[in-house]
Image (tube, rainbow, N blue to C red; front, side, top):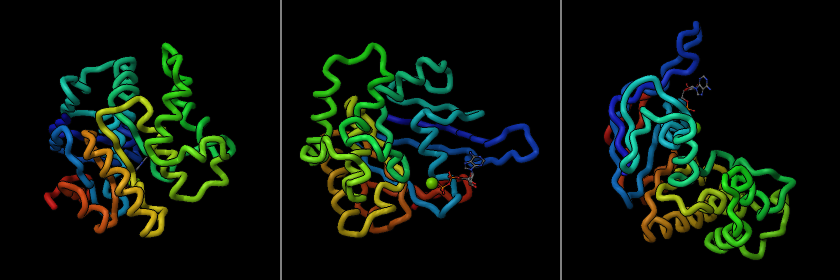
Length: 222
Ligand SMILES: Nc1ncnc2c1ncn2[C@@H]1O[C@H](COP(=O)(O)OP(=O)(O)O)[C@@H](O)[C@H]1O
Ligand SMILES: [Mg+2]
């Protein structure tokens, strides 16, 4: 499903404050796998997830997703991959608090071209899938942490992506709510989605098929 070879990523490349966050990542993830990326704060977990999600660029290395070669793609094709293949659940939800749950989920579809006619139905289906039908018209600011995370997941799955990426999806939740979110992600995995979770919680990581540890920008088999 996903194959990286020797990926290097430097922030502020060529400047005095250049920082190499990924130092030669080799990574292979099979279709239908559920993988945890673990590591200390600052190790490069989010950076790796963003590169996988095609929202961050990298200087060298090869990256293939499905049959597509990411390293030779232009911005237009990258946007297509992000829209169709990948669902990203950002750290700290990244929702608009004043919008309703439904409108938060609809937002990415407003940028899609051509606009999907049935996008309200898609959004409602996504909310149903995460068990939040009754919260569709509630403002996000009134929702609990667990409910917000469900909205963020619903937004990520609206285009039925093959891969779901989640950055610390349980980081802000109590352990019971965290397990509920984990169970939701597992159920999506059982229905065929490839899932990659960044976490520093071993209880969460242990429930995945496989753990990958990142230390100082390099992978170590966990
Ligand atoms: N936009 C950025 N500009 C410069 N350095 C960054 C940026 N984002 C992250 N970094 C640095 O890259 C390293 C890895 O960050 P990150 O991937 O966010 O780590 P993690 O998610 O494992 O905590 C850290 O040292 C961080 O300070
Ligand atoms: Mg992070």
